Length: 163
Image (cartoon, rainbow, N blue to C red; front, top):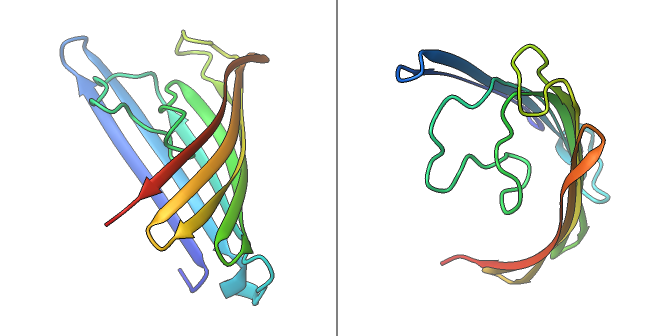
């Protein structure tokens, strides 16, 4: 829309003729780059806000699964969910960035299992250190809960490179 503000919306509809079902998946996202929008140079803050509304899974999972847009190594796409989320990215040093995110919502009650009507929450924090021009090391902690019960917790470290 303007420098420092990006809006994205995605929609997909899947029909499974084998089971005679149809499902809708949509999400919207706003990214605010405070350095560009307001001249906030300290830490170069970027805030991402999103809403998603996913019907129960109605399609076969691709080979790599349907990854969450939140953080790809840990969580897969979570069907049957309506949720809001926010992520804050900060540049701590020239070669170190950090983020924290949260997502909150509910599994849809009228559409059944799994976790029908239960609450959903996802918390994550981490940092990425650019060790060399094409080598990043990322450290993160993630925790997800459904119905108030922790269903996944991960602490991880990985290195990524590109050519």
